Length: 417
Image (spheres, rainbow, N blue to C red):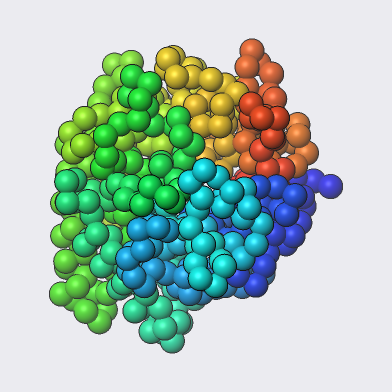
């Protein structure tokens, strides 16, 4: 079976009435995840534009419906729920590993686990909903989702931490001490993925890639609202412009005589200087402005960002782009987020390279990931590289990463279709 066939089979296997699970039942993430589902579906839409497939459209539609179904309605500090916020994780069962902790995750009265600990699921939902509408041009669909879109936009603009930068999309953990949840709320959500001198930084935290998702969501919905609500369209566009200006002022840094962008900002002002792959997502979160693509990153910094991403301390031949530079004191090639390689991460970055004409870098990244995934012969979540050898990820407890991961499958399909 070719990688393309295996990736397609994995997508079919992971489809559910809710949309698509993040991973298979024998893996850890056999559930609906707001972030994973949105990114998977955005890849499926990209593939559909080249090779139409009604299965992909069905998965996307169901994913949007599920995100709306579980969109936050009230403030619940125990789960992280807030009005308009898109869910992080939904489970009807198989949650004992989360509810049996010293600080258990909160169960709702109906005994479902609904957790909202992701700062990026809401802007990603908005991007997905906009891209789907722009593809199908179904006015009834748009009418049906508008209340949820407006609730999500309201959440993004009104529920920022009071102590934070009111332009950035940030997160801050507020939870009764009796209940647990995610401390880090971006896609790199392991406990040691954000460290300052070995300690977690002071909240609120603004992640670099999340600002680009937010910016793209504002731009896309400004364009859609322009046809029937010019005042709202202008407000969204104005906020996107202010966000872009503030982003380039606050996140910009220098590394290896190149301009790059800090992984995060905490307490409004301090950079987390770790050189990570995340700024590459900013190239992916692009929109058409006239005849060319635009990202939240100012054009004059694009060459440097791309060159930094393919520098030897980040890029591994035959593997791809690492999550963290090998020159960082926190680097560990066998860690979950501090030096490992994630196919979906590389998939977004490769698409970002293509958005701005860096085709050689895009092909280099694709070939490296295809080589590694082909080595394992499964749509695995992540892998590790050391001394020219690609190895499977295994945590200190002996648990391996997922072997059937939806966003990996969607990435490989995108690379091979």
